[in-house]
Amino acid sequence: MRARVHVSLKPGVLDPQGKAVGDALGRLGFSEVGQVRVSKTIDLELADTLTAAEAEARVREMCESLLANTVVERYSIEIS
Amino acid sequence: MRARVHVSLKPGVLDPQGKAVGDALGRLGFSEVGQVRVSKTIDLELADTLTAAEAEARVREMCESLLANTVVERYSIEIS
Image 1 (cartoon, chains in turn cyan, blue):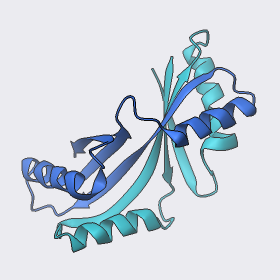
Image 2 (image 1 turned 135 degrees about the vertical axis):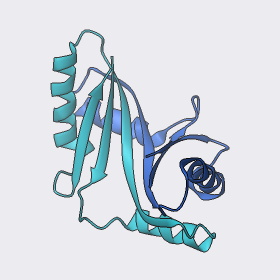
Image 3 (image 1 turned 60 degrees about the horizontal axis):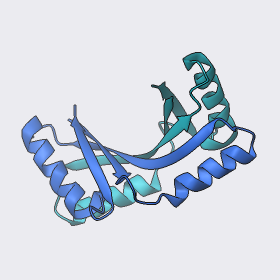
Image 4 (image 1 turned 90 degrees about the horizontal axis):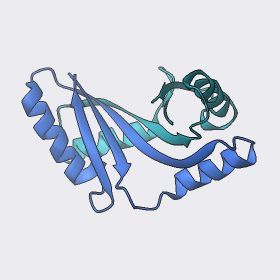
């Protein structure tokens, strides 16, 4: 079983990395680019003994304890 | 118009960040976790004057020149 976690900054939280990428693209001549936001995707291999519901609950615990900083980040989980 | 670029390490390329996350999850008691891979997602706002095909071509140029290191990374582009 696999899980994909997408961790992004909450709307309104400044994204210095995205700003740096946007500025660099502008300097390279990509003037059509507006706001840029950078986020993380974490792909996890999970033991096949888990059901999809168990896997989602465990991955949610992983997000809350390690993968996301829920003060400034939000996350979404896909199980496949 | 918006573009989402997903940049990940090519298969076979070591991912120290993913390894660190996997090890940390193991230490926290998430023993069901196997391999972990971390990748980047870049969301770009683009000028609405572009067609979807033009936008994809421009974003491909951005990937080749700045967003991805194509020696070790691969990328995919979604236009919406």
